[in-house]
Length: 298
Image (cartoon, rainbow, N blue to C red; front, side, top):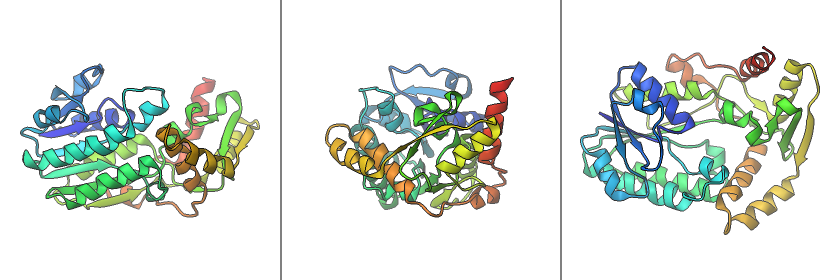
């Protein structure tokens, strides 16, 4: 039996669907105040609990062989929710789970982390992620740390400043930093295939088949739309100053600014070799852009 932590999230929901498609029985940990939605249709079992509640974690991992954890606090923080924090979820919550899991007999822990360049940013969120990676490496479990590159769906949306529908895009810094934007469905499939392997690698970092900068993404949208986008640049000094000033009072926003600054310096991003080795033909980001624009015009 597997335990999925984060199954109501954007990536976690995709992982849940693929676990069912692969015929893998799994238990899903769902917060008491959260509706499971479609997760209830694909999970073998729903157990109520919270990363911030160690007692509930003990019940969740009972009889579990493998944990898949994609939950994190940042999306909820940036959406304005005040019931979570980086400290309570990404640091202390995972500290509890990584400590409790092997005591219950968990042998493998698949952890969805972030790209190395983001983890090197020194932000509160990056430090919490790195701390969990180190805890896993020191545990008796076989850790599988998965570091996908930037996701296509959220990063090319209005919520992240890419409001192509209204003809506006925010460019963080110079906009020349490279990323191999990868589809979340491809990431979910990779996680499930790694989970099912008899002896998976302990660390995997991968992206999609195309490496592009934010400026190049804007140009790709302009080509698909047949119209220019208005580009607004956020200066690097403003991002650096904002990240430092906000760290003690809004660590989530501080982390987003700091991680964006790190990405703006990036010259090389991981490719899709890992995905191809897993038998996954990943969707190129330019194909995703063309499909988005075509769907909007139907």
